[in-house]
Amino acid sequence: MNKDCLANQFSLDGKVALVTGASYGIGFAIAKGLAAAGATIVFNDIKQELVDKGIAAYKEEGIKAHGYVCDVTNEEGVNAMVAQIEKEVGVIDILVNNAGIIKRIPMCDMTAEQFRQVIDVDLNAPFIVAKAVIPSMIKKGHGKIINICSMMSELGRETVSAYAAAKGGLKMLTKNIASEYGEFNIQCNGIGPGYIATPQTAPLRETQPDGSRHPFDQFIIAKTPAGRWGEAEDLAGPAVFLSSDASNFVNGHILYVDGGILAYIGKQPQ
Ligand code: NAP
Ligand code: GCO
Image 1: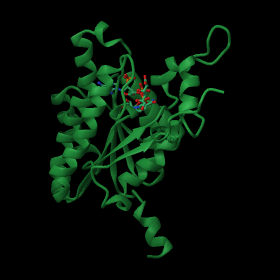
Image 2: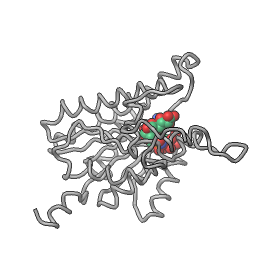
Image 3: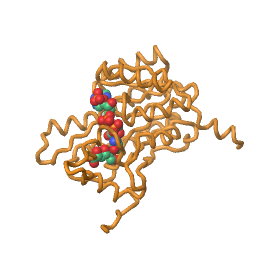
Image 4: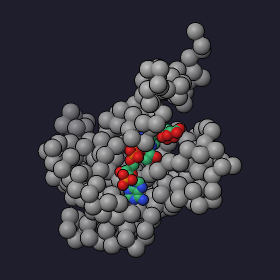
């Protein structure tokens, strides 16, 4: 294999990528990476104002993204959005199930409705969106699905019972899609980010009234061999790999992009 042949394996030229919930945060960073590799970017958000902001943000990066208003928990709305994308942009070659929420509430204080809301967005929605795009992927003869899992696909911690249950389920949904649709040349893998500095984790990094770092911030730094929080951009390269021909024989794998947290017992107190 020569240098050009290897480089081409990572090219996404001519591919249409749908990244859900990608007006900002991890989804936005992943979409920028996919665009840099040649993909046409399609994204959605619940609110028109955020879709508009997202389109403007992509434009600032030199990316002509296609934005749609859609709540990923609404199956009818998702099916309508996918049909509209196929009509206006093209068949979706790459799906990144990124949209997600978290509720940090002690389990015995959490209502069943709050639990269901997290499961709905973080687990039911990836099922709904994957189900909407797979038939056209089968017709086209290929497809890539990337589910954004989490450290909580492997580990628990206080106050995140619903999120951990959803992300643990998402890991197994990933493996099941890989199992059920691998024969159609569809690869389904997960990316498990570690602790990434985005709006979702902002409450865990707030500077304390005395100017010190948030205790959880210090905890994560001690638990991460890299000694830092991840940046959303750290996820772009792994996403390009799992979206490209370079990963055509990678299926049902969860790629943890966590700076080594899952491998490390943690720095001993000094
Ligand atoms: P974020 O900053 O909170 O962004 C989440 C995105 O999902 C937002 O654009 C949000 O749109 C969208 N979204 C939420 N519910 C939606 C729905 N029902 N329909 C459509 N869009 C919806 O989160 P993030 O940190 O970028 O995380 C992105 C993904 O990575 C999530 O799945 C998260 O669980 C996962 N993750 C994050 C970390 C981390 O440390 N940050 C680590 C591991 C995994 P609105 O603004 O309209 O709500
Ligand atoms: C939390 C964090 C984590 C991260 C991520 C870790 O409250 O523990 O929000 O859940 O978001 O999922 O991989």
